[in-house]
Length: 449
Image 1 (tube, rainbow, N blue to C red):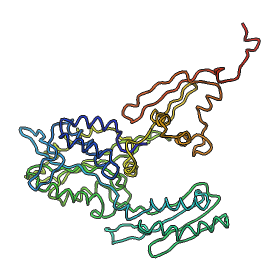
Image 2 (image 1 turned 45 degrees about the vertical axis):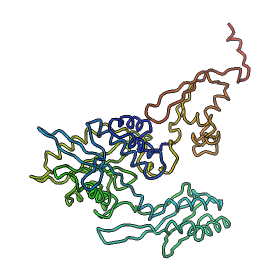
Image 3 (image 1 turned 90 degrees about the vertical axis):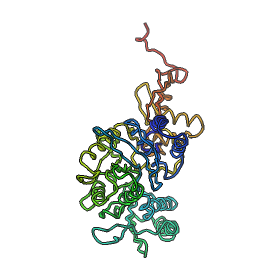
Image 4 (image 1 turned 60 degrees about the horizontal axis):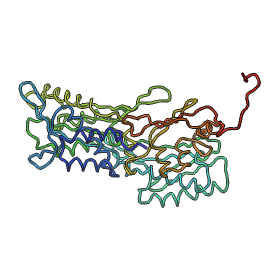
């Protein structure tokens, strides 16, 4: 399983490249943060990738103290005509962690599913809608799901939802519905045995209409304090990275603000930050069944002001430098949202590759096979990973079992390198049916020479 936006192999390459730029203790701390469970893993990943990318373009100073004691991530002297433009900047990560904490829908779904299974009901027959309330007045509004806080959610589901599920399990209705309306919750449950797939939903609580009440604005505001004492003529840059922030995506609905609009409005009023580079990950459709992950960088500059450090030329120089650094970033292997959900999983993760088959070959994850032989994965878990057998979601036949049933034995095995994909392919070759594993066969008379 992938845990980070970038593969571990690509990040190791960048850690190696930073040997000439960072102190040994700083570098070892960065490596430890990449492996450590918790919310610091994604910021460490972005910092590693960006510092390495900047170092590929030119030299930089890391965490050089400013007069007020703050230590921004990089100080660069960019050639600018006859002289050099000083650029001071910081790499930061923004997420929806705070807003998720106040809207514990993930915890509710887990508890709901647990009680549905305990009651012996089919989860695919349910539709669950969660209500919301709106706080503030336009445009300074936000939506909050009507759920109890995390500290009371487990007890709430046990007291308010579980009895309804047990009642339906006992009466076995074809159709049923129930509404829970309390001072802190609003939930509508529907049960329909003709429904093939589970349904449900809630309003988006991490899309924003306010230019100031959102994670992006808050993060940029905190960076103003860190860069305030930079040299007066230095351009101040913030590289704002996606750590699981819905608002950082480029998609925007008619009633919400895009991340670019939030940053543009911020820069119009800020006297400290001059340039913001936003970067997230999006997926691009290649065809009806395949998608490709791509980095989505955008550079937003404060309005140019003649006679100040925010000249058109200075902004152009900074933009060119950042664009050259972007070219040295690794390719993403996981979107930021899923990476943010996996920060508490143990590192370094497990096998990631899928399955490829032909008449005489089967290719699968070398790491998964190693985990199987090492006893870390059971045969049942292997079946689940690849969707083999009647108990799996895909219920596909086990290709190895089919080869064995035909008497086809393994005639060769080799490792196909997976480059920086954090896994390799293990290719098994199979021959024609072998009497060592198949019934004896006889030639018909016409086949005898």
